[in-house]
Image (tube, rainbow, N blue to C red):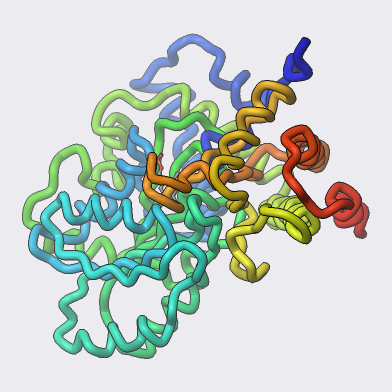
Length: 398
Ligand SMILES: *Cc1c(COP(=O)(O)O)cnc(C)c1O
């Protein structure tokens, strides 16, 4: 007997739960890629994407995942030997930095560890010290999916402005676009990258690079750019096929169309507010469990927590044991702890993450929390009592 049979919930931070509407939109024959519905739907699709980014800038779509967007964004604005400044608050900015290094860029990394946001004094010092303006770009991740830290994007813009530093400001919103608030134009972001499989509720396989005119002028100075990564034909196509440097990701586009319809029908502000409240339900439960025993939220300060994902410390090997217990007994799959300790190193099984991004609602979140509560009990892990009560109370708030 297993209690896991029934509809499962993949509560990992991407790929996220795919709505039936998205799946159904993709369940169709291959369309004509030369004319008709597919090319005709692009202008509105691009406009609706821009509305999620609160952007009036340009957007190139690539057939790739987030790692591809890391490379695509850099390929258009910097050249081998250029220097970039990377602000790391977990695993993903370090990944972007590694991509940069492998492209022959020099990286200065301000690494803030796994539990802190950006140190703005240190950032100001670093920018002021660069009077020769060697940094061509500053790279940050809005939400680090490994640590669940949410960084303050406008504060980094303010630091650049205060230092009078002309570097391009590039932000990775892969984890959190459509989940945590983001304003590309108002926040002065020059390049923003995201991907389909998290807040945008579409299968992995397409990624987006948004860029403004300043970033596009940097593209002029790039000496060599591969035909595939060049954002110009994709963002300013004469012919439909130029948008994708070849065959379009036809079914992803239908899925994305359905997902954007869902977001704009609900209303972006309501989508963000739903995620905020669901996140507060999750935090309320973990804060109570943490009153006794090993459970501890990775991010102490609520203001620094993402609404997309929650990283939890529980001590080796309980993270992995709890995850397995939930898979076998409840039909919930939690995310593994990544980047908190090197993979395979002692302690690496002492973490897990709960994804609560995209097509997620109150009963799904209460289900996950209820099942974690059972797991803690079944495994005999000490924990504070009343976590579900606390989450339920947040849910009941007006
Ligand atoms: C998921 C994620 C990535 C990587 O995306 P892939 O599609 O796995 O390549 C990069 N940055 C952040 C912040 C992410 O959440």
